[in-house]
Image (cartoon, rainbow, N blue to C red):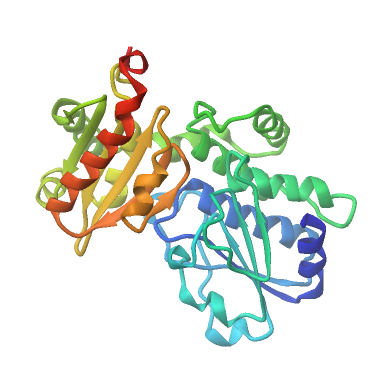
Length: 318
């Protein structure tokens, strides 16, 4: 499949790369990393990265503004996006051919070519593997590409702490750091928090609720976010805050936006994306997301997570 994707890329002069809404470092890293690899490899081609910009990720990359006409006869590649409903910028359908590259469960098999590897730590890891497979066939790595791919890997592995981190992940990261970019700058952009967000984190640690079977949850209402001068994207950066607390097996963040309540699931063992799918969401086995539209629905979410965690027993909480 990697060879087929490379040949398809060679066949097109215009390539437009998309990723998912509400992007994280892996979305930007894989999208931008692929773009920079292709720019270094095929300078004669027109390569674009599109989507709504996320202010908290400006340190990684700024995106392109292109017209609808640019899609005529173009190849479109979507990175790090499991289902079509989450693709940022609906114009992805305007191209001549569509490729999906992703590491989430392949529940929506869209595209003319699909490369899905659920064993990969991140889509950024897959893009580096794509480069390795094609470096003898015309692909070139650049400092800019290496920086973005490294950032995507770091972001989706939680600095190599998550179970998805493999020997391959460490190998690839070890190779990427030989390129000329500042890891310190990446870490500062990714993990430095403004004082108001630090205070919100303190609120979360003091006010999370824990129910049965090691299930914890936090409700961040619009009023609360306004009190801390925080937006939903900034609040989402704190979803890992409960991960180091002994006795918590799975946890849920409810983050209220203007027209919906974003639900962020995390787990230390139970496969949590099954619950996310019940609420028209999805994601990884231990990290997933969904949306609900009332606080009454939040009760149903917590109840389902508690039922999921019940069979794991007390031994998993100690």
